[in-house]
Length: 509
Image 1: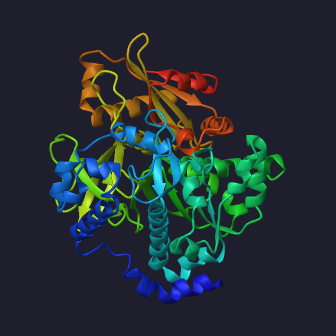
Image 2: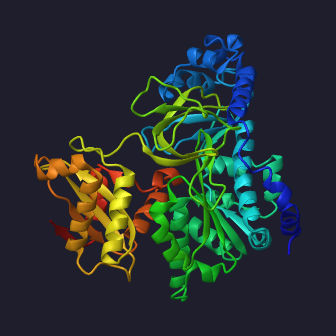
Image 3: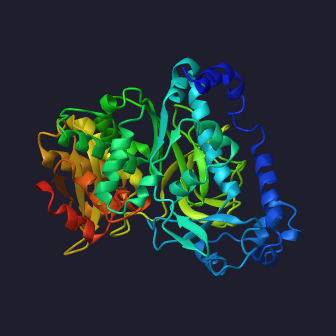
């Protein structure tokens, strides 16, 4: 048993007290905002927005209207040109490059404070997991925690490295929290020097297979893709019928981020071969927003890393604070943090499932798929698939719904089933899926059955590993993890073109 494991078990009772939500969440938020304003009041942005005159949260809200990334672009361009003290008073040590999932690439200045915050949030997840069952769960510290990060260095801007979020956080682990659990953490960053993707991934796999991995960190679908590639590599080398649990027998815990884990449960447990404890982290290049600190659903907002405001989806005139939100209402997340983002609407939609303590769930991005005013959401798609799986006793491995307008609006459900869990009748599955979607979205029902504005959907059942191969091709082309994530809802023709060569069966209603 490692020293870390012994310490974790011995002090778990005391550590546990550090993990409870703050007694006064608003006070934590007020103090955080005050400090952010204080350290950045002499920046160009701070002077233009009268930071020196801000005394209260309401003062801040008057000085800084809610905005999107375009508000910061002129300031960021000045920073790119080498000008100092523009958005942040402290030196930023990294440029975070977004993956472009919501449009063109964005540059986010990342400060040392943000690096500390990110590792602090991961630290909390690990400690909370250990505290749930100290004797059993502390065993994750006896082996290697494998952090499958993105490329940390894509280019340099005036001597400041620029790369993707997870790579930046992995490479810049130089604070107390990271040192504490870096005792057993491993990041395969050295392999990004290998430019040929096939050679790089093979080198990563060979190295990983030598390790006693107890924990995997990463972007959900990309981490699963990596596991699938490990299995494919071993099968090519004569090890048939193998699962991840056979390669890493002590693997028992994962921290997943980037996209809701529930969309990938079947695919994940299929490649692993057994149930694994998983916790989610909800964040972006801009900052970590919330983390899962318990086995039950719900993410705890990180109130000491971001000043958070919540704008009701149906009333953008309100800017609510953490003590003003209500359960089961949808809100846009607005953040202010040490990375020079002030009242920044990231256009993520969340819902609080608990108020005391505050717990939220990620619902969807602002943009939903919309062919004729029906606005189908990720949740509706997920539930329609899940209910169809239950009804027909099968399991979808991965899927997406793609909208097409030619010759008339309709949806194409692209779906891959687990090899031994396919429905007996694909058309019956499509009918069940469509019935569920109509029940969940009455506008969609009306547009199909009454107005005839949308044609009934089509199902494309694709071959085994089609989704894995798509992601692998994206990664081979050099796409970062965020960009290689597969969209669950899309209107991109190129996605349909890709899967048109992978079709096993097509059915219509």
